[in-house]
Image (cartoon, rainbow, N blue to C red; front, top):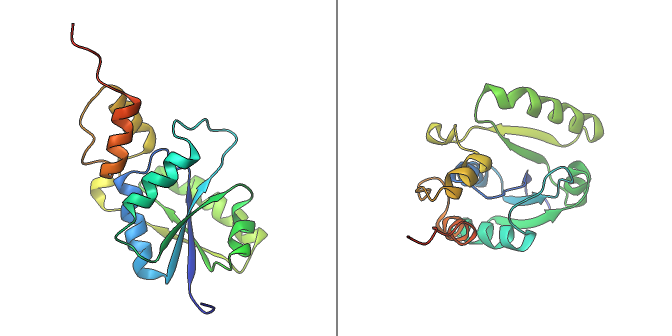
Length: 166
Protein backbone atom coordinates (compact mmCIF):
# COMPACT_ATOMS: atom_id res chain seq x y z
CA UNK A 1 0.00 0.00 0.00
CA UNK A 2 2.74 2.47 -0.85
CA UNK A 3 1.29 5.85 -1.62
CA UNK A 4 -1.19 5.55 1.23
CA UNK A 5 -1.35 8.55 3.52
CA UNK A 6 -0.60 7.14 6.96
CA UNK A 7 -0.97 9.17 10.15
CA UNK A 8 0.01 8.30 13.70
CA UNK A 9 -2.25 9.34 16.58
CA UNK A 10 -0.20 8.94 19.77
CA UNK A 11 -1.31 9.02 23.37
CA UNK A 12 -1.25 7.08 26.60
CA UNK A 13 -5.01 6.46 26.32
CA UNK A 14 -5.32 5.64 30.02
CA UNK A 15 -8.19 5.30 29.33
CA UNK A 16 -9.43 6.23 25.87
CA UNK A 17 -12.23 8.79 25.99
CA UNK A 18 -14.94 9.76 23.53
CA UNK A 19 -12.82 12.82 22.78
CA UNK A 20 -9.98 10.54 21.60
CA UNK A 21 -12.47 8.52 19.59
CA UNK A 22 -13.85 11.67 17.99
CA UNK A 23 -10.34 12.70 16.87
CA UNK A 24 -9.75 9.18 15.50
CA UNK A 25 -12.99 9.34 13.53
CA UNK A 26 -12.05 12.72 12.04
CA UNK A 27 -8.52 11.55 11.20
CA UNK A 28 -9.84 8.35 9.61
CA UNK A 29 -11.68 10.48 7.07
CA UNK A 30 -8.56 12.52 6.25
CA UNK A 31 -5.99 9.74 5.96
CA UNK A 32 -5.94 6.34 4.26
CA UNK A 33 -4.66 4.67 7.42
CA UNK A 34 -4.32 5.65 11.07
CA UNK A 35 -2.13 3.99 13.67
CA UNK A 36 -3.27 4.68 17.20
CA UNK A 37 0.08 4.54 18.98
CA UNK A 38 -0.05 3.76 22.66
CA UNK A 39 2.92 5.77 23.84
CA UNK A 40 4.92 4.45 26.74
CA UNK A 41 5.80 7.44 28.91
CA UNK A 42 8.28 6.69 31.71
CA UNK A 43 6.94 9.67 33.69
CA UNK A 44 3.41 8.25 33.82
CA UNK A 45 2.15 5.33 35.86
CA UNK A 46 -0.85 4.12 33.89
CA UNK A 47 -3.85 2.56 35.61
CA UNK A 48 -4.44 0.16 32.71
CA UNK A 49 -1.89 -2.28 31.36
CA UNK A 50 -0.78 -2.11 27.73
CA UNK A 51 -2.91 -5.17 26.97
CA UNK A 52 -6.00 -3.62 28.57
CA UNK A 53 -5.53 -0.37 26.65
CA UNK A 54 -5.04 -2.27 23.38
CA UNK A 55 -8.23 -4.29 24.00
CA UNK A 56 -10.30 -1.22 24.90
CA UNK A 57 -9.07 0.76 21.89
CA UNK A 58 -9.50 -2.20 19.52
CA UNK A 59 -13.11 -2.55 20.61
CA UNK A 60 -13.78 1.20 20.30
CA UNK A 61 -12.30 1.56 16.79
CA UNK A 62 -14.12 -1.41 15.21
CA UNK A 63 -16.27 0.94 13.10
CA UNK A 64 -13.11 2.33 11.45
CA UNK A 65 -11.48 -0.32 9.23
CA UNK A 66 -8.51 1.90 8.42
CA UNK A 67 -7.42 2.19 12.07
CA UNK A 68 -4.71 -0.01 13.61
CA UNK A 69 -3.25 -0.10 17.13
CA UNK A 70 0.41 -0.40 18.06
CA UNK A 71 2.62 0.32 21.05
CA UNK A 72 5.32 2.98 20.67
CA UNK A 73 8.27 2.46 22.99
CA UNK A 74 10.68 5.04 21.67
CA UNK A 75 10.78 8.45 20.11
CA UNK A 76 7.52 9.10 18.29
CA UNK A 77 9.09 10.55 15.15
CA UNK A 78 11.33 7.48 14.81
CA UNK A 79 8.25 5.28 15.14
CA UNK A 80 6.56 7.39 12.43
CA UNK A 81 9.57 7.16 10.09
CA UNK A 82 9.76 3.36 10.52
CA UNK A 83 6.12 3.07 9.47
CA UNK A 84 6.46 5.60 6.64
CA UNK A 85 3.87 7.94 8.15
CA UNK A 86 3.28 11.34 6.61
CA UNK A 87 1.68 12.96 9.65
CA UNK A 88 1.24 12.96 13.39
CA UNK A 89 -2.27 13.72 14.61
CA UNK A 90 -2.72 15.65 17.83
CA UNK A 91 -5.96 16.64 19.49
CA UNK A 92 -6.45 20.15 20.82
CA UNK A 93 -9.22 20.59 23.36
CA UNK A 94 -8.54 24.13 24.46
CA UNK A 95 -6.03 26.95 24.18
CA UNK A 96 -4.21 25.51 27.19
CA UNK A 97 -3.23 22.44 25.11
CA UNK A 98 -1.82 24.54 22.29
CA UNK A 99 1.45 25.79 23.79
CA UNK A 100 2.65 22.33 24.84
CA UNK A 101 1.51 20.68 21.60
CA UNK A 102 3.08 23.47 19.53
CA UNK A 103 6.46 22.95 21.24
CA UNK A 104 6.30 19.19 20.63
CA UNK A 105 5.30 19.74 16.99
CA UNK A 106 8.24 22.09 16.42
CA UNK A 107 10.68 19.61 17.97
CA UNK A 108 9.25 16.78 15.87
CA UNK A 109 9.62 18.95 12.76
CA UNK A 110 13.25 19.67 13.68
CA UNK A 111 13.93 15.94 14.11
CA UNK A 112 11.97 14.83 11.01
CA UNK A 113 11.07 17.73 8.67
CA UNK A 114 9.12 15.46 6.29
CA UNK A 115 6.55 14.50 8.93
CA UNK A 116 3.81 17.06 9.51
CA UNK A 117 1.77 17.55 12.66
CA UNK A 118 -1.95 17.92 12.12
CA UNK A 119 -4.02 19.40 14.93
CA UNK A 120 -7.64 18.28 15.15
CA UNK A 121 -10.25 19.57 17.55
CA UNK A 122 -12.73 17.13 19.00
CA UNK A 123 -16.41 17.98 19.04
CA UNK A 124 -17.02 20.84 21.47
CA UNK A 125 -18.94 18.52 23.82
CA UNK A 126 -15.61 16.79 24.56
CA UNK A 127 -13.38 19.83 25.05
CA UNK A 128 -13.41 19.47 28.85
CA UNK A 129 -12.71 15.75 28.74
CA UNK A 130 -9.44 14.11 29.77
CA UNK A 131 -8.45 10.63 30.88
CA UNK A 132 -7.56 12.03 34.30
CA UNK A 133 -11.04 13.51 34.75
CA UNK A 134 -12.67 10.27 33.61
CA UNK A 135 -10.64 8.19 36.07
CA UNK A 136 -11.56 10.53 38.93
CA UNK A 137 -15.29 10.51 38.12
CA UNK A 138 -15.22 6.70 37.79
CA UNK A 139 -13.42 6.36 41.11
CA UNK A 140 -16.51 7.82 42.78
CA UNK A 141 -18.90 5.52 40.86
CA UNK A 142 -20.49 8.34 38.87
CA UNK A 143 -21.94 7.73 35.42
CA UNK A 144 -19.27 7.94 32.70
CA UNK A 145 -21.23 6.21 29.95
CA UNK A 146 -21.37 9.35 27.79
CA UNK A 147 -17.66 10.12 28.33
CA UNK A 148 -16.02 6.88 27.17
CA UNK A 149 -16.66 3.95 24.82
CA UNK A 150 -18.69 1.10 26.38
CA UNK A 151 -15.66 -1.21 26.68
CA UNK A 152 -13.81 1.47 28.67
CA UNK A 153 -16.79 2.06 30.96
CA UNK A 154 -16.88 -1.70 31.72
CA UNK A 155 -13.16 -1.77 32.52
CA UNK A 156 -13.44 1.28 34.76
CA UNK A 157 -16.31 -0.34 36.69
CA UNK A 158 -14.04 -3.37 37.21
CA UNK A 159 -11.24 -1.13 38.51
CA UNK A 160 -13.58 0.86 40.76
CA UNK A 161 -16.38 -1.44 41.92
CA UNK A 162 -19.14 0.12 43.98
CA UNK A 163 -18.56 -0.38 47.71
CA UNK A 164 -20.83 -2.93 49.37
CA UNK A 165 -23.93 -1.42 50.96
CA UNK A 166 -23.82 -1.41 54.75
